[in-house]
Length: 433
Image 1 (cartoon, rainbow, N blue to C red):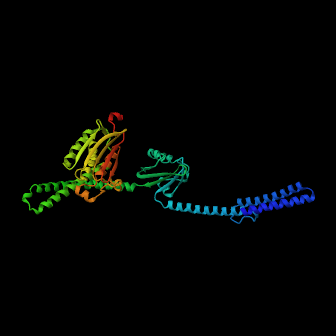
Image 2: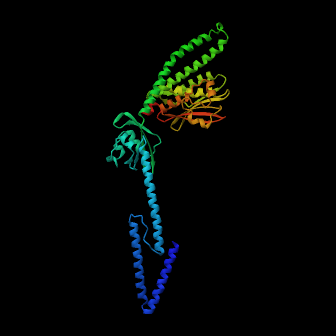
Image 3: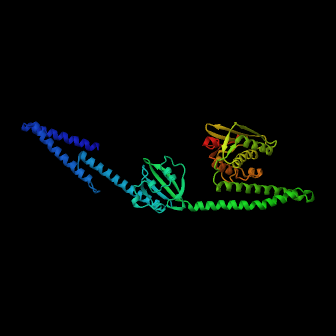
């Protein structure tokens, strides 16, 4: 480009010098310069016109032959056009590839403009939501009028998926997930989870049925083993150890069956209507006394509870949740560590904490502690007789009482399990009206 500019400047200087010489010869210097300049301008305009004509054409042929700065410019424009054409081909190929990929998806994908109008969707979305070409540009909440979906799609954050009955098909369940991109546009994914939820219900029913069926034979076994243990004097000595192990394992199976029944009930029944209030001081006091009896001299259990704390909900479920946390602290920590129960308010929230000064839990285990049968240490859990369902029960009970479980732990320094309840759940019934 610089070479062409220098050549053009040189050409102009030569032309100007030649025009001045001619003007001096004919005695009309100014007129000669004007005429020469006009001719040069016309030639330049002709070059520009040819360049514009080439740019306006859709052809990919070579630009017109030019010299000087205009030749350099035409060459540069040609290279730019080549890059643009290649970029168009790449974009077209990528767009085609994306369409092929999204067409192969079983999940529906929908692109929405910032005002939540339909812009594009894949074939699966057409099948799932019965979309037609006439729906393009339509506000999606006009097509899916479920109030939960309307609130979901017009929200600014999409942290959690939404599950609702399928529009016009009550027997099916759809899950919606969304995310934003660009200037407020939304990509919406829709999935048919009817079969998944059906399998989940079958699993719950199976667990509930098998748990109930196990209780009767286990009760019989426990009864007979207790009878035999109470009459060990009449039995051979080599049976004593076997009977003790049988008693230990049947009681463990019985606890497992009870926990499975409890968990199944929590999953399959509606949350408590919160028409009853629970005096936390009285509830936690009973748990503390029972825990101290179980702990004996191995642990010291303490309780700090602000007076007048009331929680709306089911006393039996809350007792199960708090008792599980306290018993876990007793069972899974060595002798001598303290176990503390503390209930207090933090702003408008009510918090029940169960802490210990025991061995603690590594950070990598904390996110999975509430999973069923998850064990930090299999040998320790087996020795303590745990079922691996205690924290899963706690999680479900808290969810049914507008609460959440927060866990903090430091290896070698102990753990704190905090049950945090929403303001509405933690106020007396009279205050909720």
